[in-house]
Picture 1 (cartoon, one colour):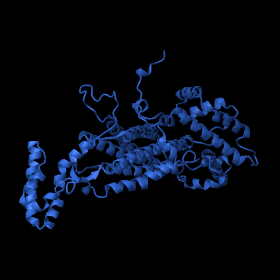
Picture 2 (cartoon, helix red, strand yellow):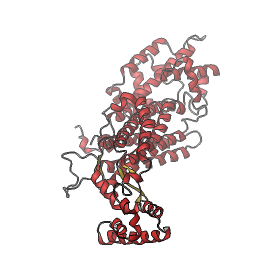
Picture 3 (cartoon, one colour):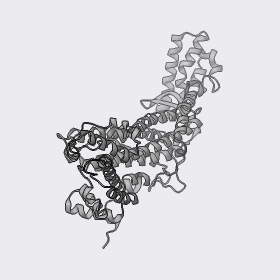
Length: 505
């Protein structure tokens, strides 16, 4: 009897959050097909470097041809199932696939995995998967930054209260705040792009054998070190599609490894993902705070329910999910540090079970968070009337320094005026905080004869014009668009228009 999927646990990352594209990258089929691509590249390289040798090729052209035909058609469900059966017997995932591949490549069976240890396959496959996953993350980061850029540009001159310590500070603009979000993400994108462009190359383990000494390959090629080098370069070139004349880029592969590539590389990757997650968390939190102030709302569906008990509620659920997912990503990075720190001598296997969770799930969770943030950034709603109301309630306090300067220039005594403003401000603050009434500081100043000379300036067109207090915020948004958004649009082109990144739920 076939078990119902409702009777077993399914990761929410797969069922609710990650995109089909990212799930495919980390799927069993993609991993096992990548292993087969590696075995093909190994066989091709071994044929290439021995075909003209005195004893003839270690791997024949016929064996390579048979292997290539099977790899090119792709691994089937039946072959994956067969490998699963073999693993239950052999208790070894890589060897189960070696045997499963040999069953459909009878001629090539004797030479599959020749001279290799499991990590010659797994480590190099990891690099290929990371490269694909990093590229996916970079595209979604670019899409999100682009959406934030459009929002920032459209709201560059909408003044709003600024906050430090979550207390009222100098005004900024809605667009400037959003541009800051975009800038922080662009710093993360720079890091992700660097990692993607250098992966898989800066984490290459290559063909190094059981403990990294290449002893098996040296024996395979009759103690000829130059043939071992030629084999490894040929393998790299075939696996990564690099022309022979360009294979010097593989000089940056790790020449000194144990059984695996240095596991500290995992910390670099997860740290960059966690840094991106931290910025997304900050942006989502800002939107949640502003939503509480009724200034900004994330998109809300016509039939969306905010609360099962309180029908009026319009909860920022997308941003809440972003915070939950990104917090998960940030906490995964500790796994990589622990794993790197506990790799005894040439390697311990306690890395494997942990990495099967921490690496893919970090990418899957961040992928889902980026889809959500792209959706939010593309549909943010600004309630300008409320933004202005909140700003104008505090602006009299923020304007007091300018009022003081103008009153002094009109002939007043700075110390006397300062004391009068202090007293009036405290009384107005008491009225607001303790009585729940409107801020009447400007009316108090207008009624004080000491400020008579500047009464005409105490209007929204003069000292109470919010735009007089936002500094260079609008032009900073323009600079952000020019220096970040325009180059980003040029670099990513049509990829920014991909609509596949909408959140799944």
